[in-house]
Image 1: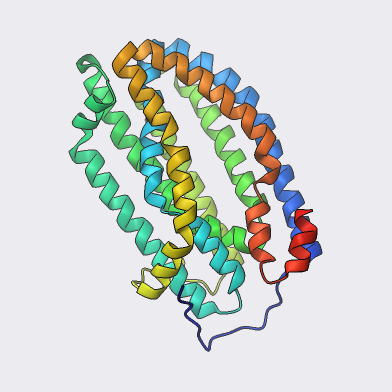
Image 2: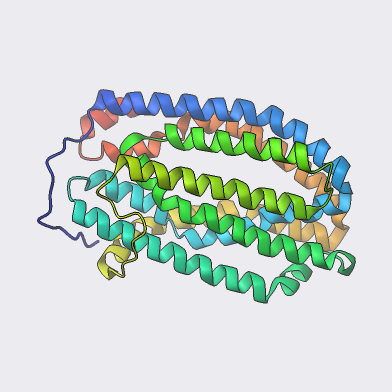
Length: 318
C-alpha cells in the first residue's frame, strides 16, 4: 500500500493512552445514551406512522431502508480507511489534505452516479421492489428521495471520519441523537397534517442535510487548515483508501444485503402486508442489538489512534 509522504509536517503529539481511553468512554456513553433514547422513540413512532400511513404506504416507505442498504455498498470502506490513515499520519497535513480531497471526490462522484441511476430507473426499481402499480408514484418518490437523502449523509462521511480520527465518536453520536430527535419531532408534527410517504421523504432529506451541516461546520472549527470543499484526483491516495477498505467492504456487503433480500422475497411472495410485519419486527430487533453493541462503537477509532502504540492499544483492548 502506497504512502504519500510530504515535507509539510507539523509537530503535534499523538494522543496518549489515557486521552484515547477518555475519548472512548465519552463516545461509548454518548452512543449508549442515543440508543436508550432511540428505543422508546421508535416504539412510539412505529405505530404512529403505521396508523397515519396505513399498512401499504408504511411498507412502501420501509423500502427506503432497502434502497439505502444497496446504495450503502458504494461506500467501499472509504470512511473506515480515511479514519485509519488520518489517525496514523496526522502530522503530515499535505498527505491528509490529499487523502481527504480524494475521498470527497470519490464520494461526490459516486453519489451523482447513484442519483442519476435512481432518477432514470426509478420506475423499474419500484417494480423490482414489488410495489403495485396503484402506488407507482409513491414508489418512485421513495426511490429518488432516498437517493437524495442518503447522498447527503454519504457526503458527510469524510467529515465525520476526520473528526473521529482525532476526537473519537462522541460528537458523531451527539449529532445522530439530535438528528433522531429532530426527525421524530417533525414526524409527530407533520405526518398527521400530511399523511403520506412524501412527508417522510422530505423529513428524511431535511434531517440528513442537518447531519451534513453539523459535520462540515465542526470540521471547519477543529481543523481550520483543512480545505473543506476540495476535490483532488490523487490516484495514490485513492489506492490507499481502496486498499485498506477492501476488507471492511466485504463485511459491509454481507450486512447491507440481508434486509433487501428479505424484503424482496416477502414483497414478491406475500405482498406489502408481510413487508410491514417484517419491518416492525426487524426494527425492534435492530434497536435491541444496538443497545448491546453501542459501547463498542468507538473501539475502531481508538485502535486507529493507538496503532503505533501497541502496548497502550493492548491495555485499552483488555
